[in-house]
Image 1: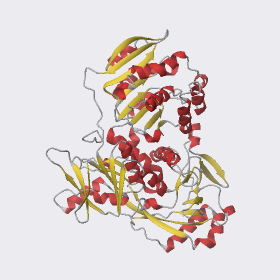
Image 2: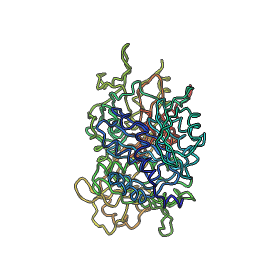
Image 3: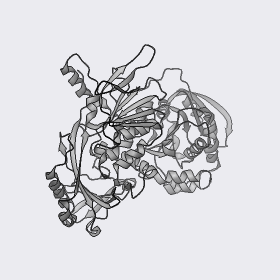
Length: 612
């Protein structure tokens, strides 16, 4: 790894970055007028290939709407090294500065970094290239097979590695590389590429260009669902909370005309109306599925917040202290340095604690409003959706009618996304000749549980009695956020009442919340005791699945084409919503996934569909 830290690219690497890959893959001409373009690179290195491709996209008036750049790296360099190399190329330095801002916390697995308002998406995989490519699900339009003369990249010419690359290609995918390997062309041919030897190159390496066009029919893993038309059409999102807003924004960015419907009088009228919410990663000794998902979700949420919200007014990356009263929520025994960006051990008296450097607080309503402000989204409030009806004609594709309580049509669309929390299950159209079979059908599609939660908040009158940062562990306490009245407020919550879908305020819950505060922060509780009885209260209904993971994707029913879902975000809607919106869009368009395929598949609705 030491050689990577001191490595300076020779002149031929500049040739690689500037000439070999863009020109070798026919770019930018090949992507002109396309909705999306997907580049696969097999070694990120110092990031020059990404920066130059980004620069070419940014400078091209005929660029695709979205640029996906998927790369792998076994040992990522530091942000400082990225900037030092880019400083040699003035036209790339501003882009490198943006990249370096998010170049942290790169634990093994995939990380999605977002630029240009969500139009340039870098998906960087940390680890072995063969294993990482098995965790992706997309077809590349261009492949950059990088500088194989470097010692750590020799294994890219392993037959299994090249077959992994080939699995991510479609017929016509163009590949370029600069290689000193005499067997490179032969192995590419064996993997299904038609290779063109070119005179360009250096004394040590030659340029190869290839096109994926195997003599056999490649076996492709089936995507969970594909739209009947790849071009974006009309979409209705039911629900204007965090889940619905995130899905609407992701789809609108891809060209869909999105209509958001909600029964409330404004956006974020349900559980997303919480005055302020805490963001902190879940931790576990085995780095569980939930732990990995929350880190990816936090990264996605913070990127939106930094780009679209006001720091210290709408959000604050203050960090969060987690008190571990029962020693739960620990870190893996071998926690790498990159993990300390997310969480690390911290002492706190007799109790162990964690410091979540990536944590903070955010106002859900502000996040929802920012997401719904995306171009291509229209909103209708105060409308009660009662049902869905699938309609088709002989000369057209199937489409959905969204009906109100009087049977009148509210909207028509080829795609409907159910994002109404606990109410989402009620919108699944019934099937079967009897009421019993209809009820069974619904239960196999969406199994949801309502969780009522109540919080208390009030104005900060004694800042010295407050902790310096948000604290969680037995409930969660935000010591200072800017309220809608411009006063500094505190917030403590929340209760957790299963199977209650009514957000009524309960007087007795205030005492329960105070007892939670007394255990979490005894001194703060004593200082707030007098004012707690007159504090404000808020209650909302969250929605969870049986395994406490979100449900994202198609309903996986051939009789319900174009009916998708994003719900069950539970008490982590702020962590999950933006990520789930991007995941839904990735499944829908067969794009590169923002997370590992096994993580994404664990969120599909079909995990609750039982055989009859």
